[in-house]
Length: 220
Image: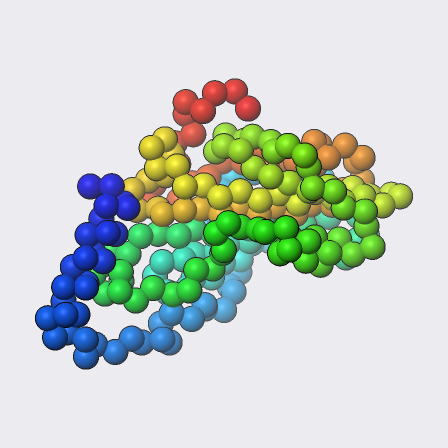
């Protein structure tokens, strides 16, 4: 049974139980709140980044929200004096493994779609104040599919902001993983945005529930 089919079956069973007199069960909201961020080692991240002298992983942290979401941040080196944190964020959404897990899920930690023009404009203004920002006319592709990005520049620096939602169960995601969200923010001295995007192009995901299969996607 696919992950989506399993979730639909759980939802149907949950509705049947509720109509059968089980509606007295009380939701425990305290278990659904995000836990504080905690530092982890770089090898505990569910992602491997290409070696980079400009953007090495210098710190890592994670937190969970309920039993469904885990969020990770890889803090990357920043060769500029610009404010802000160079980083890769990975949000992993798993499928509930119980009936009550299907009934009681925390609020989604990322929106779908990831950005509208309004929310993207706010995010870019927050990330790159006083810089000229342009959303790329066309997307790029890494081993997990297509992604979108924006480029910000001033007289001395170039920054990129990329985002991607992975939901392809047919070729990549293990059955227990519902979705993976990636967000990448990097500022560097190179004027070529493609150079700054190389770590995002070449990243590889590994997850506790299974390694994502990146085979069969063709050339990057």
